Image 1 (tube, rainbow, N blue to C red):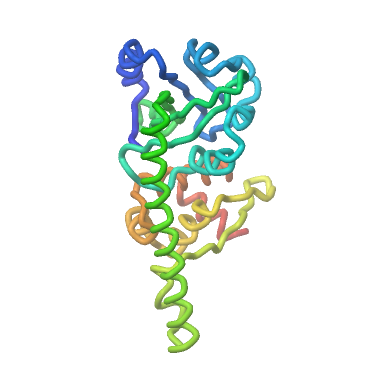
Image 2 (spheres, rainbow, N blue to C red; image 1 turned 45 degrees about the vertical axis):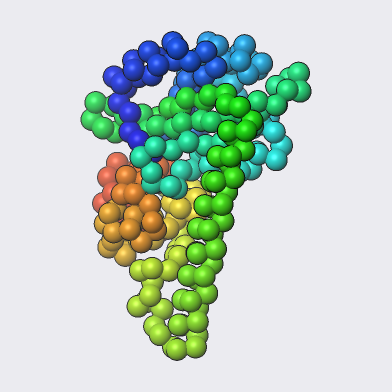
Length: 248
């Protein structure tokens, strides 16, 4: 996702002045707290912004049931590594009306370029445009999934049939070594699949850039996931995190 400094938020506010069917929202870096949502949210979406502040997870109930699982994964964990990231989902207003949403996301940073939150602009678009973009994204997702399955099949064949050492192909094969780690108090904390992959390669001595190349995501996306792991593990630096994981 593209980074956006706090100072640059003024540009978004200016943009929104001419976008009557758009909502600006900001969440905490962990996505667990709603920090801001445009005042026009209540009128446009038909739901209470106050309820969203009090319980951010209620957002899922605004979505069309078929979109809930997909939207949750896309919104919370961006894996694309693209500079500009948008997500597509539908909401069902209390009246029963279906609205089609295109939601642009940005990583919100402070003056030290540290990621402090996630910002987005959710816009209503017409049904035809939404369906066209959704079809294109879904086709691309299917292509990537098929490629990954083929990749895994090839690696298994090389290992089992040709007796190639698994270590020699590990740089390109999916690796999920960590499903969880411990924080400083010894409490188990769960990692997402992508966090697990990033941590696994970094533990092998790969840089964020090398890890991004292996996983086909950007260096900044890898750093974002590592920052999330550090926050979960209550570690301030990558070295501290690696030391803590090794001792687990």
